[in-house]
Image 1 (cartoon, rainbow, N blue to C red):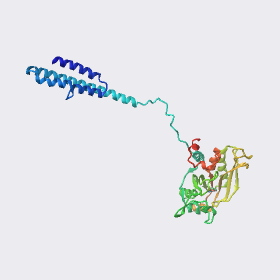
Image 2 (cartoon, helix red, strand yellow):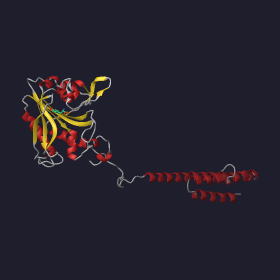
Image 3 (cartoon, rainbow, N blue to C red):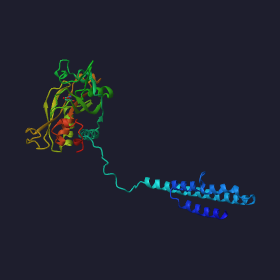
Length: 343
Ligand code: DAH
């Protein structure tokens, strides 16, 4: 019996050592110590048939062998577990030196944002602050406070999006209501630009869109003249289109300024001789401007006897189209990534 036990122990220890993987080890364990047909279990069952004297000694030997086998199984278990953990770690390892995934796409600024940011920085360098305001406006700020009388055609429902059941609300048709809001908020003296979205109820085509951008500006102080206005607008024109650019101001009526002008710059493409971009005129119309009407200053809470100022409104969308040669305005609000990805 002792012989058998020795053999069993040797082969058991060998099998344990050779088990690759926890399931294999479990099988080995079952073969030796399994309650039903484990080899050692079977051997131990034979104990009861031995004479008392031998029973004691062999029983002891068997118990020792069992303990030894169990310890070997425990040790092997730990070994295998550590191995598989190391394997998992290896699978999770990240190679920090590998090149970045080629599919990582970068975001793009929308062309309107590019030009807007550029102008914000330029105006900031001249001491302007940048402000914004609501796109859903009251009729009062959008029209009345800007000296636009109730019967002015600009209020016509053809051009303005009115809000159902809210007769006094409109989607702002220009950024000019922010003239009043900024005067009321900051008072005089004032130097501020206000870029933003505007809405008009237009039939859309390549040159018209119901949603577009303007950039409004206001300068108010004690001795402001049209010369200051022309100086600032010329600086902007040269910044946009180069040092050779000239500015032409021609009278135009806007209810909120007096006098009012329509501002043109020499065409950046032909320099003034006439081409496709400027429709053979040599000039491109890019802003409206003028000396702020006293009624408008009053609505803004500013004393027109003490202060004067000028206001201007750039067609930001138009600047973007001219800068990048975009010939259909509808592309800008289309959400088509093929447009944005080019910038
Ligand atoms: N609000 C005018 C428009 O949408 C543009 C404009 C003209 C703004 C003259 C001004 C200005 O500030 O002085 O057509």
